[in-house]
Image 1: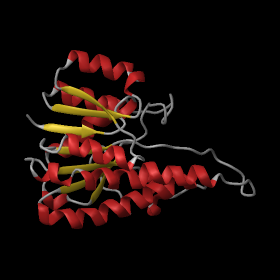
Image 2: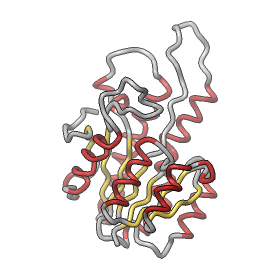
Image 3: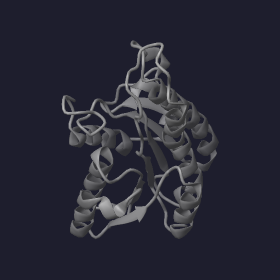
Length: 231
């Protein structure tokens, strides 16, 4: 059975990734920080026997290693780094910044995906598809910065893009690919109620790109609709 491991699976895009891959007949390893509070995810797991829920905080290096060891004999076809945070609001130029929040944003958005990917390289290498996906943002594109603010989020996603681009070169000799996705402006808790896209539409678009991926596309940065984003 084709398998996917998804971080941040309890709501929003993560939950929709789980739903669509479960419906497609994949083995889904759904991870989140607080499984006991993930009611929608639990209902999905009740409906689809192939959905397994695991506790995981992407900032907890020890727990990442423990989960990788738990699943060591299981091939992971698709590793989906979906978990992310947005910790700031727009502030005037002279307002103080919360540097602890900035550091935490980097721990989740940048360091987390690298920790997860490195921990599961062996499981990826044993699979058929061998693909790592990072859910990033066009806000991490320096070329597309057209407004001030969001410094924590922008910088963490720009750093994630750089990390994943470099990682794609490291993993290519193992025939493991890397894709970076901007999911669009999606109606989730982060995206808000005015967003034009539903999670279903966004994930469906990204899945099409995953389905047609070849190693020639490793390290590239796409919108959910397949258009490439400049760095």
